Amino acid sequence: MGFLNKDAKNGDYVSVISEECYFQGTLDLQGSVRVDGKLEGNVDNATYVTVSKSGFMKGNISAKGVVIIGTLEGDI
Image 1 (tube, rainbow, N blue to C red):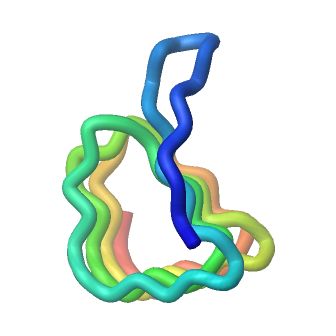
Image 2 (cartoon, rainbow, N blue to C red; image 1 turned 30 degrees about the vertical axis):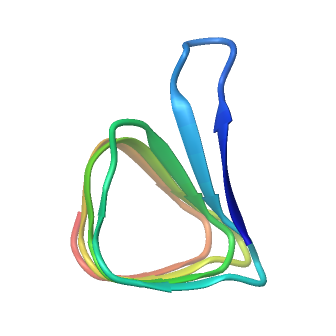
């Protein structure tokens, strides 16, 4: 299950792909995303992308900042 949360510090919206979630397709964001589950596709125009320890992403990332702790198969 994913959800949208507003970060009070900077007013940025943060989308989350939770551990139980699998998403396939392209995300075109105006905010940030944290991947705890599995994402197969590209992330475009994001502010920040975080792939957590439990996260897996297969695709390319276009963002201002990226943190990879889990697995990324693609280009930044």
